[in-house]
Image (cartoon, helix red, strand yellow):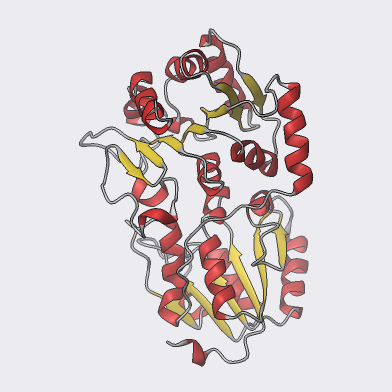
Length: 369
């Protein structure tokens, strides 16, 4: 359907009730909406913890936080407020989730774009909640492209596939002070190592990550900044990594908010991490990245670069390079399995058996050593 069939679109609501990385990777779709409807106001509705991924971007006028912990009356009030806004177009990027579809319908927008999930369809009649239902996106395509595939059938597209992230000047200044307080001198080259995920089956071996920290500092002459999320499971895992370290990196144990983490990443010469939101954030601020993959597919979630076309990770498994980034993944028959660890152990052997030599060989290549 060509754009001309969307008449007088002045007020757009984008909905994405997903995780941090998912929201960040939706930025090119927001750009497509801005380019297609240059005079429209774009509002983004998302889970509160994901808001920093969108806040500050010039394409979005307002970001509305949804607090999943609050009750029915809060949700009812929020829905009533959305309906009063008289949106002309809603775009549900929640991957076919029931809430996104239902809320899109309740806004009363004249045009409502969405899609159904692959496999499980959720609530009955969901397809009728949209006025424009896109075909279910190909599960083998990257998340950036899957979001775009929801709006492309209706004449909404962009050639600008870069994922952007905004860091306020005051945050950049405060982060430089935080780094200095941890012993990272102004102008000193550093690498960021993020060894944890809230899904622990995505983590590599603690001793291997510690060896990477030590050798990046000792052999590569880089100061290493180690970061992790604030959950207790991640903090415990970080303690395990640091317990193997023989050097002393600068450590931010769950202390950084997402804007601060983005600012620290933006100043790094190299990023080493696991398949998690910080890896998407590192790629968004253009840091050469080594990302360790296990049960999940890089074709879906590899560090995004707009320098490698729409299929930056065309292989099902193994080592893949795209632009300044590399995905390290075993070339095993069972990879990627999509499971939370091997045999229910919540530990992924394909990750545990990655070696520091494999990781640092890529670091050497990327740093021109």
